[in-house]
Length: 635
Image (cartoon, rainbow, N blue to C red):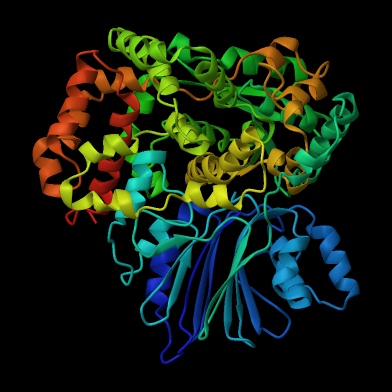
């Protein structure tokens, strides 16, 4: 696992700056603290930071082919690299290392851009092909590993594993992208391919970019499909449960490849518990499991992970998170993620990663199960709102429900009824995908009309939301399959995987996600929707597949993520920071948000008239990011 960066200048007029490349590489030392490496010519500069996991002694990057006409830097792990290496040796390729990185390069020599079709793994890589004078950037199928780039007016390409790497290059301007800001306010993250900085982009998941003096080609080599899911005749779950367990188990076995010890992140939910159970069967030794608990009882679920660990016989490690530990990290969030990011579970994810890193360099996690197997409550809510609109009289929906909502008291001690009902009823009469993002996200367009200052409001008309594009590309017809497609393309990559990569790599820890292995994804997306959400039972087939292998109370317990007491924090411990970052003077100076609108949000929240946790946290995370990255005094 590594961090990669580079610069390509196809003109080749003068040698590229080693100093600038070094600065970019140093900005991601956390991604690879073990060693660095460089390759520099007039036309290309490649840099790498390495976290040594495979071929500890010989895998230093950048790595060339036999004739040194092609060079690669690579971030990720290829789980089938040994089989590919044996095949390539039979084809006459000579290897100087035992690393998976070199396998990709020789595979590229053999198959060109089609090399990615043979890769089973998580990856972001760059290949400089001197023969063709081309730079190739590629990203894995689900977007597990990140890759950013920008194309300068003079044609130079600058790329890196994190945005801070690009910003370390003085040629990259820090201009805010208003369309990205608008999307962030809606989604709580900036969806691919945009970033919050204008003209800085992410490589799309499942895509390859090929740059040359002639321009750029953007090639999609993998597309998520639900066509098979909807074309199958009626099936019985018994025909698929065993196959699912086998496919998952094989993915776990493959993803244990490593020259260093591997642990598991264990939350006590069904996804991570399933991965842990399969890992215990395959791992040659005692598995180290890691979980995080909370000192606040209503948020603490460590006992469930403890029960699974006892059941499986792992060596269990438990960290108890105090509110002060979490609060101390709030100002540091921009350093972890580079962009505005409003998922508060980033905090426990980072602390858990740092805790696990004390014992291991690599862990398996359970991410992806909700998006593949319909684990989120919103899937059921989409069904329920249909019943609500069909069965509840119009007069009740139009007049009585809003009247009652205005008179609900707001409680910060628990997840309030006010918060849940407002979210649910906000989806009335709204198109499917728009409704989905209203439930998941933060500000809706009518709220942004009041929030954004007048000069920025045209962006509301100009924004073509990324979810619209995904809706056009989706081949599913059933509403819930369309939601799952959207989750995999948007929330999974833009929030969940983004969070896990930044939090874990900030702690120099590699997280692998077997549930998102290419074979598991294809198997899951081919399943009929009624094998995922049946009645009120989410993850139906997965629960059937692990029945008898995990305690029933773990299989049957309702989903609960890394929830943080954000509503309470904003009204207490973080109140001073919140008022400072959202002060009228600061907002007027920045020029994005209307101070009066923000003040109303604050007043309603503090007076318990309305639970504005999501809106205020979203604004706070933008403000602390802006303070670090856009304030001229703090750059």
